[in-house]
Image (cartoon, rainbow, N blue to C red; front, side, top):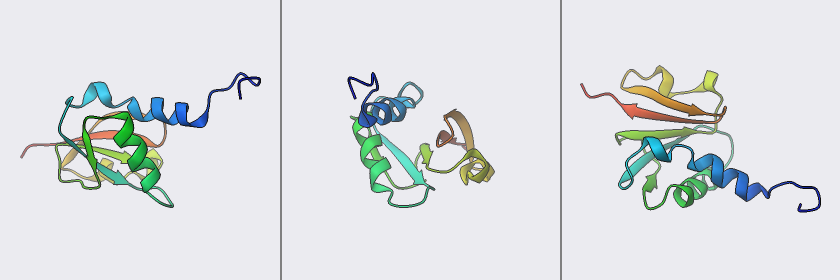
Amino acid sequence: LRQAARQTPDTYWDRHYREPAPYIPATGTVGLLYTGSGDSAHALNFLQYSLAPRQIVQSVDHEFVIECGSTPADSVLVRNPNFTLVRAFGDDLRLFRRIAR
């Protein structure tokens, strides 16, 4: 990879999954809704590592929820009236905030 002047895949995912950090509290629990195909463990592990010391849990029962894995057109939370989109990061990662009612 060095000779090809490319970064390792882990470096890319770490940087990508760190993008929501400025938009969420520095500590606490953040929900994760994995909507992609396959195993959600990869996304959960990278998000947990990249956003530490925050705790990432697979749940939408939190003020902030990261939706990961699907395209914006397939987003589940975009259509949920209880959430508002804070910011999208590429085509597969979106941060939502629960709307107080």
